Amino acid sequence: MSRHYDITAVRRQFPVTEHMLYLDSAHQTPLASSVRDALLRFYSEGNEFAGPKSLWLSRVEQIRGRVAKFLNAKPTEIAFTKNTSESMNVAANALPLERGDNVLLVEGDHPNNAYAFLNLQRKGLEVRFVPLKGETASAEMFEGYVDKRTRAISLSHVTFHAGHRFDLASIGRLCAQRHLYFVVDAMQSTGVLRLDVKAVQASIVGSGCHKGLLVPQGLGILFCEEGLDELQPAYLAMSSLANPPGDYIARADNMDLKHGAGRFEIGNLNLPDIHALDASLDFIEGIGVDAIEAHLYDLGDRLIEHLDEQRIRLVGPRARADRAPHIYVLDLPAETWLDYFASQQVRISPERDGIRVSFGLFNTFEDVDRFATIVARRVRTSALSAQAVR
Ligand SMILES: Cc1ncc(COP(=O)(O)O)c(C=O)c1O
Figure 1 (cartoon, rainbow, N blue to C red):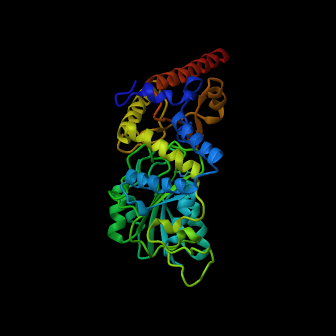
Figure 2: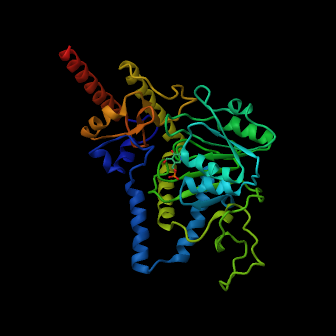
Figure 3: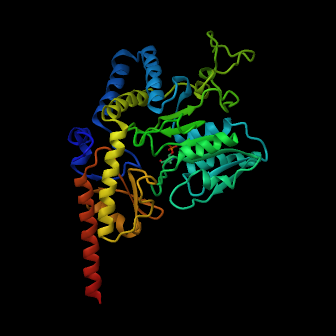
């Protein structure tokens, strides 16, 4: 059941749901049949026609346009990368950072964001980890850490480890007021939560595509706000240039960069995954991100009800405004629960503070109830055996 879309039709796209209780979409989403079909079509084109590369490249531009629309950006503001880490490293190395400058990150945020900046410590950058205060990160949390040498704030939209949903709009406002670059890791939110890069005033957004965007690993996207021409790519290839040499002979006197995010693209792209992204955007837009978000929040509400009944603490935020729709960490010791879940064909992830349940667009209320029953059964059995020992 879903109050927001035809979940039966959506679920049919994920045959894995027939033999497994899949609650691990924040790790990776299973492959949808329509996305698999797009990959197969791409491989058949390569197989039967030796790859119509010009056609593939024209499709890349069309799909770039779709990604732009999806994020409320312009096509020239979008580059394809390999994953989130590459997008974050592009950002960190492109920003005009000087020795003694500092960048603000959130303590405990995803390491793939943090290392991109920590790597620049050897060039004299100061990385300041700002501790989370309460259930969300908003401008207020960062204000006391901004000084004359602060150049950027970089953080995840949604945390993978407890499902916080950070207040990007207020942080974007702070960055605009203080002339800071605003860098966002959207890996856990793309396809699950609407992200309007203009509304949150982001300078750079990076994301992989293998979670909410339903594409196999190996494709990332990068939004870079128009006009940030001072951002210089750390790597260069023909594809980064405004006028690449037609005769394929490199010349040092004609190295003007493309305007826009294209300057950060180097070499051949992950064409199979970009084709897969086209199919996944068909699928996601056919349902609507707002409908997906609303459905996942409904599932989360139902899960929280079960947790309250069973007196199991939710590690992350409870309020819809502060929490991501799909990520819930239960205060259960992973080391004693993992084998049990595996034995019940339940796929979850161990997390820092417990067991992480994460929903995908194909999960149902029945999935949530089934999970709660499986948890309750083990709690009951453990209580009975503890009584017997006494
Ligand atoms: C917030 C966040 N950033 C980044 C990543 C992964 O980075 P990458 O796409 O480079 O593998 C994850 C999880 O896989 C994540 O949860």
